[in-house]
Length: 349
Image (cartoon, rainbow, N blue to C red; front, side, top):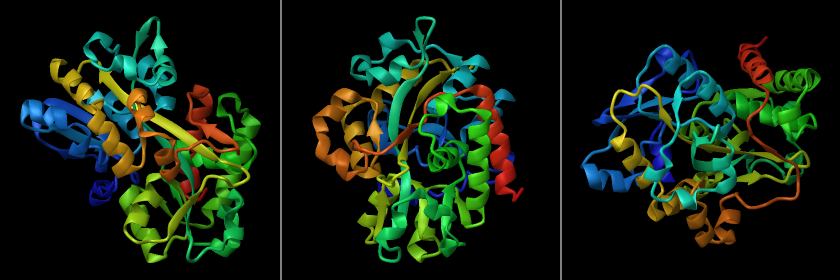
C-alpha cells in the first residue's frame, strides 16, 4: 500500500481541464483511471506479456472523467464506481463486456457483476471495494469524541477536519449523519437536510482531501485530526508509525463502495489488450497485492475467500453491527442535484 502514497497527483480539486495528468507507456492500451492506479502491482501479468505498462490518464472524480469522455477524450478502459455506471451507459460511453474473454469470470463477485447486467449483457468488471469512515489521530483525539459523526460539526475541531473532495463520499457522510443509511430511496427533504449538515461541517473543514497522499500529509502533521477517509488511510499511516485509526462503529455508521473497469465505446485501439489487462488484474497475486498493500477488497471473490476473514477485519473490511450506507446506484436526478450542491458548499455558499 505504500506505493499509493508515493504517487500524489492532486487531481480532486479544481476544474478538470487543468487537472488531468498522463503517464505514457504502451500506447496500444489507454486507461482513464483514478490517480495511483498505474501501480504495476495490479497488472504484473500484463507487463510480463507485453513488456510495458499501459498508458494512463488520471482523474480525481467520476464526474470529471465523465465530462472528459463526453467531449471526446479517447481511452480504451476506465474505472467508474457503481453509482456512475448507469449514467455512463445511458450516455453511450460503454460497450458490453465480452465475458468469454475474461478468464476468471466465474470467480467474480456475483452480486457486484449482476448489478450491471443490462439487457442480458454485462457492463462492469468489479475490481475493487472498500469502506469510507471516520479516521482520526488517536494520540490527539479522545475516544469519547469519535463515537458520533457529529464530531465533524463540533466547533472544538474547527480547522482540523478533512472530507473527501468527492460528492459520493461527502454525501454518504451527510446522509448517515442525518439518519439515512439507504440513499436509493432518498427524498428532496433528505437531500436538503444532508446539504444543510454539510454546510455546517464546511465551517470546520481545513481541506477537502484530494488523494491519499495529501490526506496522509495533513494528518501526519497534525493539521487534520478528523477525516472522512477510505480505509487505506489508517492501514498505510500505521505502517509508517502514525497513530491514525478508523472508527467504523460510530452510532450513525459508515459507508461502503465498489468500483470496476469498463470497456469504453469508440476506444482508440482494438480490444485485444483490454482483456489482457482485465485478466492480469484478476490473477491471484493481484488480489493479494490490493488487500495487503492498499487495504482494499478485490472483485475476485474466489481469491478473497482464500485470504480468510481475519485480514479483512484487520484492513477495516469486516462486517459491523451499525448502519452501513452502500454507495449503490441512486436516483439520477437526486445525484445531479448533489453534484451541483456540493460545488456550492465547497465554495462557501
